[in-house]
Amino acid sequence: MKKSLVKKALIIVGAVIVLLVVIAIAIPLFVDVNKYKPTLETDLSTALGRKVELGNIGLSILSGGVKVDDVSIADDPAFSQTPFLQAKQVTAGVALLPLIFSGRLAVSSFTVTDPQVSLLHSASGKWNFSSLGGASKDSHSESSGATNISVEELKISNATIILGTGGAHGKTQTYQGVNIEASGLSYTSQFPFKFSAQTPGDGTISLEGQAGPINASDSAQTPLNAKLKVKSLDLAKTGFFDPSSGLAGIVDFDGDLSSDGREMKTNGTVNVNKVKLVAGGSPSSVPVNVDYATTYEVVSQKGTLTQGAVHIGSALANLTGTYDTAGTSVTVQMKLAGQGMSASDLEGVLPAVGVALPSGASLKSGTLNVNLTITGPVDRLTIVGPVNLSNGEMTGFNLTSKLGALGSFAGLGKGGGSNTEIQTFSADLHQDPAGTQANNVNIVVPSIGTITGIANVSPSGKLDCKMNAKLASGNMVGSMTSGLSSFMGGGKSQSGGGIPFRIEGTTSDPIFLPDIGGMATGMAGGMLKGGAGNATGAAGAASSALGGLFGKKKN
Image (tube, rainbow, N blue to C red; front, side, top):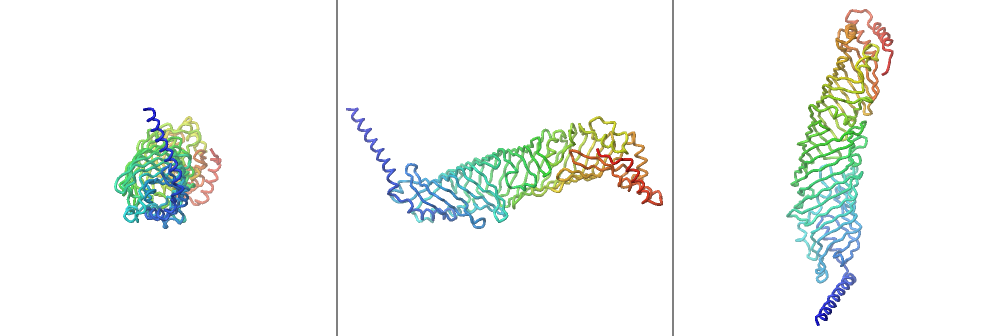
């Protein structure tokens, strides 16, 4: 008897399941969801504040939703006439019982697969999505009652995002594999969200946290608190920097981000490998790490870097200042100050700013002090300020022998071994896209004396330096230099009381040449001071004599 009752119960349950399956299959044949399309388009357009167009709508009972083909959401006309969003298909979660029995379409969620979305901003800082959803806060009260739309869950998967600036001359970059998840979207409370994307060059970005309440007047000013992670972002492939600037590097970032809708604060650690800052530079062989904190005004698009601890090995410098993201390029007004930094630790990053040591040379020791002002667009920076090196030693390069190869420095070439001791080096640096100029160069090399002058380095690394060597009094040719200095004007001539020479070639292969014209001018000045009758003739004779003395050798 009991077995019979159980058997009957199972048969009834099975029959109900079969009936439900048959109904689920049959309902789409009798319910024409497309008749709700005009209402749905109207309500969505009202909710989003943009014209929404929908293709065919199909009811999927088994998945509990409505599938909509060929969805298009218009862009803000101030930015573009092309759609803000295009998607082949959107699945909307619906409440089936109200739809079946009362004809009321209640949409609770959206899943958008493989869409293309354009995110553009203007020079004033406005985004094309800022006005998106501006009317949705009141959409329920304004609705005719036929439709009830709420967004309890939003999923966007495998999207293509076009990010950049609007207008005819705007720059954009495409990001693939973008995924967004959010639930409980609200105008009155916070809600969780996740964002991830692939960057050009196989990098990744992820952002996860809490956002909301949604700002009804400008969704770009919605508050949020989130963790931001960036892996292997290739700066050169972001599309936001002029390729001719040479700016490059692989960036990793891990930090926190918070915003009240008006002011955004971020802090964290940035790690940059293979950084390159100028067109003529080469990738750094050592990483650059920055511990930073910044505040950013969302409306004005201006920010302040309150902390910027730059670590290169054991060397530490502090970067602070302001930046402005309005327009097509980020511009900065920054200060970089570092004291007592290890020169050997900094050697690996010198190529990034276009400084290449002579072939085979290396900085063994020394401490560097800098106090630099950094201004302009990040891909066209101007860097100005003093640089000082103390107690340095360069191995694999002998400056004494290079100068000794010049005829007038006879005897210098036999000393110093293969290294160069630099007691002090100082210069006033000016670097911009046109190249690097070092004014007021002053180098004290114990084995030689004092070298002064002006050095110019082109973006490609070519040298054009006018220098003057005043040999130390204890040097074996010091007395000769003293006499020659007197002959050239008593130390007040163009030569500065020493022997002028030039440096050409490149930073990796410098060529030292005698400055015969400078010497001749100095001698003529000395003769004039001594009352010589024919200074021009003396200068010509001196030039010929010096040409024979130096032999115009290149080393």
